[in-house]
Figure 1: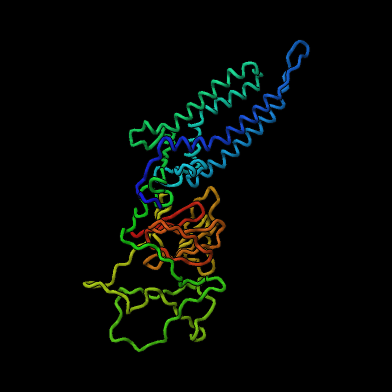
Figure 2: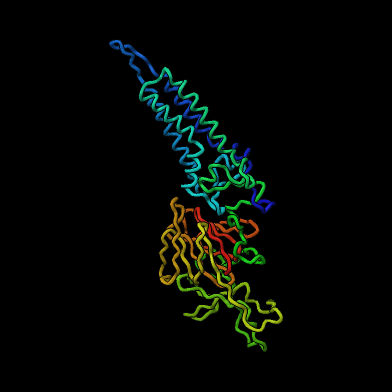
Length: 402
């Protein structure tokens, strides 16, 4: 995470540098292929008429247009999902929507259409030149149009210099409702909770996520079993405080496939939780009753907000396994097909959630409030506290307390 936690709008110079880097491959391909195509045009006289052979222009021009469109589709798709392009990465800037999340395909396409309007006009003129065979005047037609298109594109890219709101938006940003941030000079909103930041709805004094050994089963072969509770002792003279965390009991669908050492046949002892050590638990003075139970909520990167049940399945079209018929199903829109059908399993325990990646194709990760991003091991639950963000595929949700 950047040292400066404020959001910093991208300067016009960085915007222009990123745009030039993104444009160069496509422009180079078009110039080379059309130059080869025009050089291959031949003229012959037949019956007093001049006949042009434009087969080379059609062939190489078509190849150039196809390659350029494929390149632009990849770049626009990358920017729509992540706010990144080759130019953005090199210049240290990110595109975002007005809430600070990934801009999406529609706004990115509209920005590109406005920026490249002049170049598109020149391409249309080139097609007319080929159709009507205005080759003698082609240079006088296409030259000025290309120049005007290039000047227009540059003006649009640097138009945030004339924005009265601190240079926040250019003309294309205003039309598409997008923003561009300098993530080298400030915070990256796409990975730190959008415009409002990671603490937008979580208390500021929450500790960061501390990965611990999960009591939820499903551990892979070779993983050390959780520590077993000590042998039963005579009851202590004083009952434990109600503020102590109760031992966690795994639901049937996630129960381990082995019995704890020393347990009786057909019985399963609850594994020991990190907070179960009563002797080291500090009780706050003056608490006259049980501590209120926090209500956990998640907010998706599209702005939707949900209160969590005990067991939640998240994915493109989540379906529960045996024993999970009562799980809360949270379907997430995924135009880019980056999310698996059932991507994550969430299990709440009051203080946070246990997040398990369900062997997804594109994986998952957790970003703690201090900016540390950790990938999730498939099938291994990880404990996540409020104030953190969970990334799955190209989507993200943020965990908080109501």
